[in-house]
Image 1 (cartoon, rainbow, N blue to C red):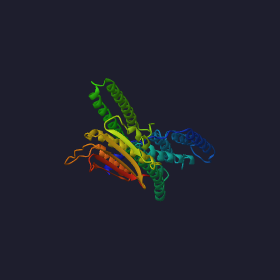
Image 2: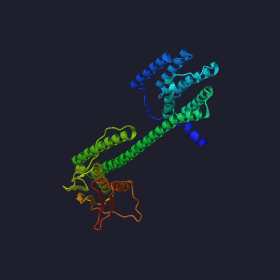
Image 3: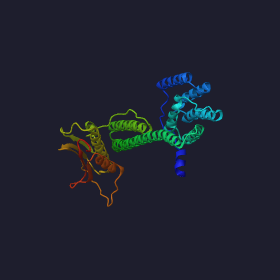
Image 4: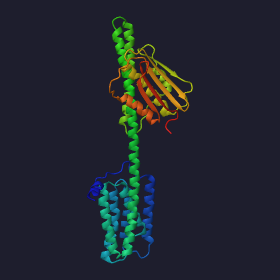
Length: 379
């Protein structure tokens, strides 16, 4: 019980508290007019000026019901407490206007939008005022029970809406975290691909620097272009990772962009073959094909010794899309190979789409990556 009280006391205010808008102000003005009208025409009302002023103050507190819920409750229920004291001391009978029932809205708004401390302090104050009012009205057991249940109904209703809003907020945060994780994987794939290309070009430039200066200059130009693209994509994705709200960024690359991976003038040469039947893919499948091919080419450039060729083949087999990337290099298989982030991310991409991915040495040499998943994504 102590833990529950402590957790409630430390509860912050909900985010994105809606401000009081123009329509709210119009309604409050209408309620103030109703208070003045009732205070003027209600027959037999004792202490008419005081009752009318206190009721008007309670209605005016609605202006702060979301931005300062505790202050609104103190003003609204404080006015009701003053009337209860007047009833007790002056023995005037029941005081108050029917329009003062709007203070129940303040009780709802306190639990819905207040912090934990505001809720504890406000509910304690409301309980004291209610006890004072029931004592002043000499309420019976049934009236006490019914009035308490009526007030608790507003508290429970506000708590339910607050809890549902908190669940929705946590769900949005979880979705955002998943999107950021996907972007982090995209960042890894993109940077790894470009950095591998830069490394290959730098090695080639070092070989031809003395004998072919013009070719070395072209290699440096390619390195500069690759580095510029890498920085641009990194900045774009890091900006999205840092921002809480959505940001505009370029669409994911897909099958139509596989041609950008093809290079005939570098070692190893990359050739792309996409069957005509591969069309009308869903965006997740389209993006996964490109990223898997990009990561496989990156791995071939890094690890395939003496590779001269990398083939990318995409085709449709029934309801499946099959992606196959193979090279002709010499891969040394360690006794206990450790899967890096690249292969792990590739396998996770295929699994998310309801497919499979295998990677390993081919029987005739080289390395083969074979992935297959439903053309329309997971069922």
